[in-house]
Length: 264
Image (tube, rainbow, N blue to C red; front, side, top):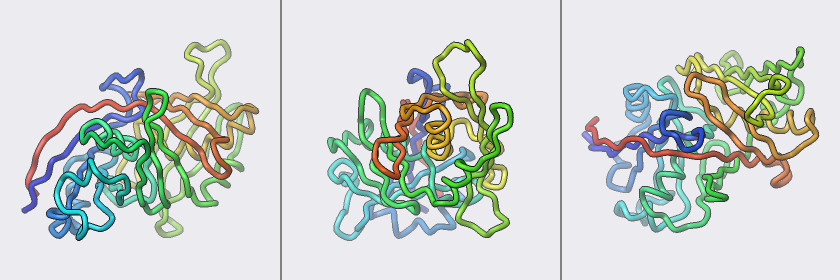
């Protein structure tokens, strides 16, 4: 049975406070571990941990990248995300958590990391005191869902599609503009529900903000946005809808909470 080191990292926190934001488990898999980590075991571990996401970070070419030091020496990795119920094609907060682990826990000196994922290459970087991640390669259906969402007295109801079958919904985004005169400086609020993925309510959802940012950029006529996800834990997300054509830059703060070892 493989013995794994796991880290719990809170992403999109409010002011770096660990009790806020969205917790993700991050597992670094070097060449010695990859052979004993089939997808079925990865899924079982994610279900056992029970967080909204468990992220697995591994070298692209395990044969030429032996040893645990690869996580300090390399700048390009493969990244996969599992909820307690399924592997998903995109997860913002677990990407942020993975980048924070490599930058802060492993001491990776690269200014930018590159994660090969089911949604293309995501390139997180340290910027302005926040860990930033580029949410690229959202499928056209996701962007269309945000652009054509019904607008009912300030309320957006939209779906974030998954890569599964046509009758399998990835998640439900509910978003609204803030009340007039509300404190905090937020451009919009949101909540995200994904019971179909084993996540009744996600505390803070980076990928949902990558979908919402183009919509609110058009509605509010501004490209730099600041939002609050109003779950019980809550968290803050910054967005730049004009960073590059076809890209949304999503950024936030991350706080390391816990490290533990377990055998599976």
